[in-house]
Length: 216
Image (cartoon, rainbow, N blue to C red; front, side, top):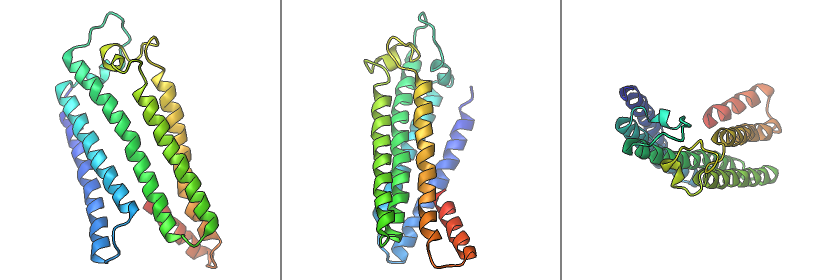
C-alpha cells in the first residue's frame, strides 16, 4: 500500500488546522482581548492532532499494510517488528484521539461560558456538560489503555483475541454514540439561550446559525 495519499491528506489537515489556530491567536492578540482557556485548549488540540498525524504517517511508512494487522485473528500469526511498531503507534494515537476531542469540546463550552456568563441557568448546564465530557474522556482513555490485559498483549498477540482483549468494535460503538450525544448537546446549548432573547425570530435564527457554524 502506498503511504503517499495518507501523508498528503494528513499534511493538508495539519496545515488547515494550524492556520485556523494561528488566526484565532492573532485576532485575540491584535484586538487586545487576551488569550483565554478556550484558546489554550484549542492549541492543545492542535498540538495533539499534529502528534497523531506525525505518528500515523510514520507508522504507515514503516508498515504500509499495518491496518491489516489490526484485523487478523489467527492464533498462528506471528507479528513482525513492523507489525509491533504499528500496533504500538495505533494504541498511542487512539488514546490521544480522545484527548483531542475532549479539548475541543471543553474549548467550545468555555467559549459559551464567556459569552453567556450572566445566564445562571445556562451556566449550570455548561458545568454539567463539561463534567460529562471530562467523564467521557477519562472513561474512554482508561478503557483504551486497558483494552488488552496485560497491555503488552495489544502488540504481542492478536488484539481481536478475546482471551486477552475485549471487543473493540463494541467499545467504539458505545464511545462513539456517547460522543455524538455530547456533540449534539453542546451544539444545542447556546440555541436555547438565544431563543429567550428579546430579538426577532430572524435575528435569533442568524445568531443560532453563527453558533452552529462556529462550533463545527
